[in-house]
Length: 169
Ligand SMILES: [Fe+2]
Ligand SMILES: [Fe+2]
Image (tube, rainbow, N blue to C red):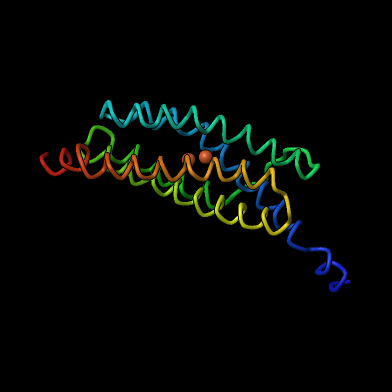
């Protein structure tokens, strides 16, 4: 019966579903960052991708702790958004291979990823607080701040060397 099904879909279900979404996304990002680091021409951009790959390992581990807080096994659920965003990144790597604008394109793709993560972690942190998962709030907050720092670092790279190089070519 539809009403029974709808009533079982409360905020804790939504929290769990969204946790599965970002868990899938983080694992996808973990697999994608080494490819982006390899493709990047600028040494600084390569270093930024490699640094964030290390942080992303932590993000996966923190999410596993959040699953434990709510008494669930860490399981991912295909996230169509991250599949689309990483697919666009792969297109840029392919289409701009060897081109001066490659790094600018990689930066743009990486920032789309960070913005997606910032959106998800912001939402999850708010819901965790509403649901009284206090330990989860702290874990989600830590990752959220690293995603924001990464986004800011990428903006700085975009405004300095990378875009200047693309314009000069
Ligand atoms: Fe992350
Ligand atoms: Fe990230």
